[in-house]
Image 1: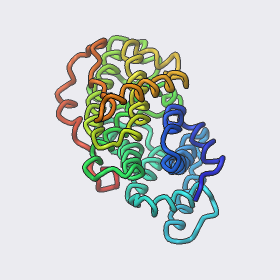
Image 2: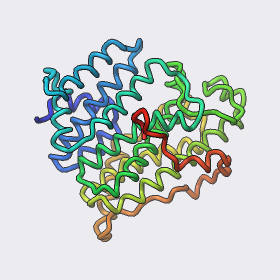
Image 3: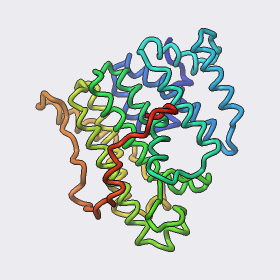
Amino acid sequence: MSITPLHRRTFKQGSRTYYNSSIFFPDDVREDVFILYGFVRVADNYVDSVPQDAEGFVLFRNAYRRALNGKPSGDRIIDSFVDLMQRRNLQPEWVDAFLHSMELDLYKTSHNSIDETLEYIYGSAEVIGLFMARLLGLPEESLASARMQGRAMQYINFIRDIDEDAAMDRRYLPIGASGLTALDRAAAHADRRRFEAFIREQIELYRAWQAEAEAGYRFIPRRFLIPIKTASDMYGWTADRIYRDPLLVFETKVKPSKPRVILRMLRNTLTSLDRPGGVPVRPARSSRSPAPPLPHSLQSRRRQPAPTASGRG
């Protein structure tokens, strides 16, 4: 089932970085990526709209479930995704985890521990890494790193979008024992030192997870690795900018421009030509921006994914 202008438009409007990177995949893979992101973006739009469209989300979810059981919905976004699941062996429990995390956004406004955040991230992002591994035909050994890639990128989104999420009365980052009472603009400016330390600490978490993701790059063929590496580089660029000035999240949405993405893509392509194993990976920590050590509680938990009992592994 081929993609439509709706797939392309939905993806492009939802994530400029992903879209600009994915256009460099081979045609067949790119079409499947567009189908995947069309489905997840439409579901996400229902819960992120203002006001939220809870009824629309439930109708979308139920139509997907009927289509999965053999009754086409007539919706190209849903039916093409179900076809993709069957062609690429995408596990229904991964989709269930994704839909559950989207549903959480309808009623859960704050995530108060790292375990709660990781539970949400499994469904909202780690399973996207699992979907992508299947679309690229990667071996089972790659799946743990694929999950970490989704986790790392989602965490940067949470950091980048603090102000936007606060406007929707949402907080995904667990403030825990940080001493902060909120992550809105007023709280950040009232205790700038503590806020900046907290944000830099979260970026160190991202860097640790990104390093785990990059450990799996050896499983990815070069023709696929270049766009993936480019997207991860752009998230690293976003992280570095925010690390230098955490209050920047209240001034602008830190995102790379299309020319920056394309230039990085060209650089990764040229760099990979003389390296049979693929493109080099970025160190987990930027030497330009040292950070204070992580609290022991986060050091001991950052490698432990949330349990899978409710579909978020």
